[in-house]
Image 1 (cartoon, rainbow, N blue to C red):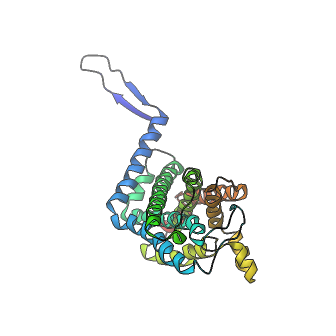
Image 2 (cartoon, helix red, strand yellow; image 1 turned 60 degrees about the vertical axis):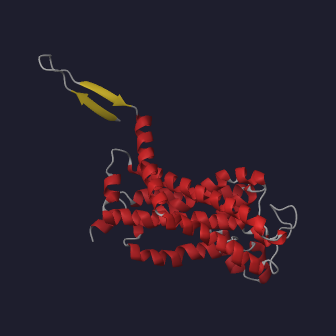
Image 3 (cartoon, rainbow, N blue to C red; image 1 turned 90 degrees about the horizontal axis):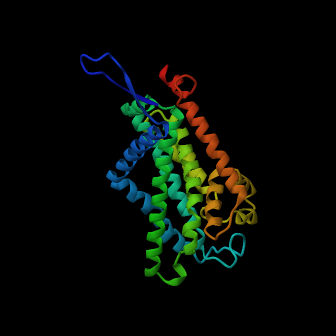
Amino acid sequence: MSLQAVAAPRGVEHVTTVRRVSAPMHLLYALKAISGRETGKFIRQKGRWASALVRPLLWLVVFAAGFRSLLGVSIVPPYETYTTYQEYIIPGLLGIVLLFYGMQSSLSMVYDREMGVMRLLLTAPLPRWVLLLFKLLAATFLSILQAYAFLLIAWAFSFFVPTSLAARIPWSGWVYILLPLAAGGLMLSSLGLLLSVYIRQLENFAGTMNFVIFPMFFISPALYPLWKLRESGANYIYYLAQVNPYTHAIELIRWAAYGKMNLVSLAVVAGFTIVFFVAAAIGYDPQRGMLRYIGRQ
């Protein structure tokens, strides 16, 4: 709670007046400042948001076009009819947007720590976990905007390709996937926040790409149904995909696109979000977390 003292005029007995700013307003000011900074950086870095959209579009145009005759999805939940491969990978490509932006948010945290901005942020008169939560919410909001921008571009692109190549989800699904996108964005941004505790230099981000992002992406149903793995005998990959939190973020989006709810995936995504965020909040605590260890080196 902020307090502001006002001195009395000369000749008048000294009286101190305290103006109180409510705690909710204080939180709103902090959220506005942090989200405004994140949004400003995102708008100024045109290459950043352009690459976030180009990457899944390349997968849709090139990869899906090449495999459309080899892969198709049978009538399995949540689908009620035969589904083309182009339509199947749309939730997975939305997951790519969330995954890569969540990791890029961790990169910005590492940069802020090297430049000293993080120190100023974490010394604000608010609980440390609140400041991290606000940064997390800002990153999730921007990742949702990118996901819908990709959907819009994919929808527009479908008018210029043959019907067999068109990739669309029902219009109602655009509304239904909002909360799953938010849940998946929160989880992946929380993971990025946790990784930023242990990534000490920007140069180490390439290792994060190889050992975190790519395994999470490829060992998931983003590009192929999991039942095809069991059918081909790759049971160990199937079981790894089942414990991959990214798998459940994609499945949550996929089911919601057709007006259905996957309660198991929802519980897994919510659970991992809490675990990642709590671990990150502890890691950023200079008295208990990893920052204490880093500061001694």
